Image (cartoon, rainbow, N blue to C red):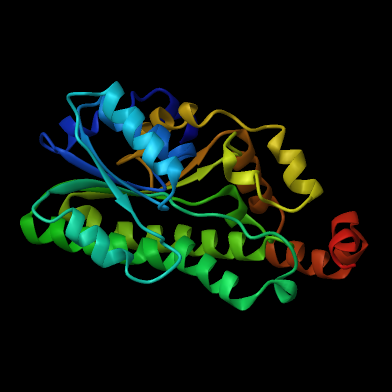
Length: 284
């Protein structure tokens, strides 16, 4: 399947969805989200940029508007880890036919679960899971009501495939995203809406900047690729597969979990996890 996909050209999403005009990207100010926004603009789509309200969003919006003067970029500052974001997004997209939705925003909390403040955990859950469900629900309803074709693309992670001590909220929320996307695809594909869940390999972005020292993260950072390498790989998979394992790390994780039983892996980690240097480092 992966080999066959490599032979396929990336979709031109504007053409695929009947001359679609608008796309929406969450987490659009940097990393994968910004690279997706650039590629969508190159394909002739105007983009709603939803991202955390800070100078990074302001800078990226100004940069892209200057780079693509013929395209429209709507800046939507929204904290997806707290309430009110759906109303903000709905108001900003009123009157627009958004046919390409990229639910990409997400971040990692590292360290022990029981040592992390509950409000931080719940904000992480809101951003990584609830906001994506709410935004996908909103735009799926719109597209179906108007009979519009389109796509919903969700950024999950290779971490969804296996237990991840010291970053359990990340792996758990991404597991939800992968399962949610698979179920959603079965419901809406027949209505003309492609659903694709992307499992990227590590990406060289600011994603890791505020993480605690974890040996496993440091190891996989060494395999990180530029976020600009991802959009064409993602566009190649839309409409052709529901889960897209992008890059060797993601493919390796998924292959490993086909060989090693998940329960065996989690039970083994439960027995020996306390012997790892990371455990001892953060348990002090």
